[in-house]
Amino acid sequence: MPVKPRYTATLRVALLSATLFGIGSCGSSASVTGPPEGELNVLFVGNSLTYTNDLPGLLAHLLRTQGGVQSVHVEAVAFPNFGLEDHWAQGTARARIAQGGWHFVIVQQGPSA
Image (tube, rainbow, N blue to C red; front, side):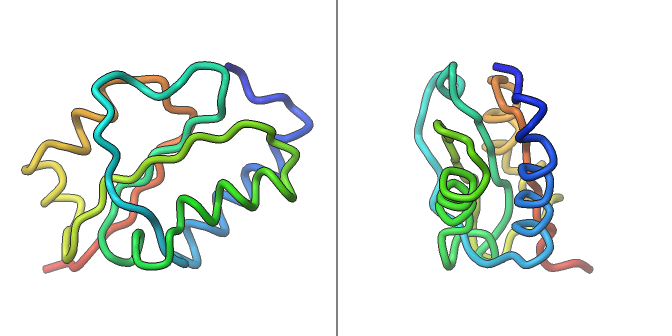
């Protein structure tokens, strides 16, 4: 589903805000197929900075109430103390991304060497 142009600026601001401020997230979803069609689909990949305060849920709420997006589906692949290299090696995030259907994938880098 293409995002309607009039929502694009608000959506970008909301996604940027979520990424910059890292205010929380949700646990990983166990879907076998890709995200639902007909919705704005956002996948978060990160660690406890992503899931602690339900950042995906917060972003979905913000988009519905302030962004004019009626239907939002968010998922997260987030594990404690994980960096992007850990996600790559572990494979769950790569598998979810490969299933396709995401409008946005937001990645949050964890601890760095």
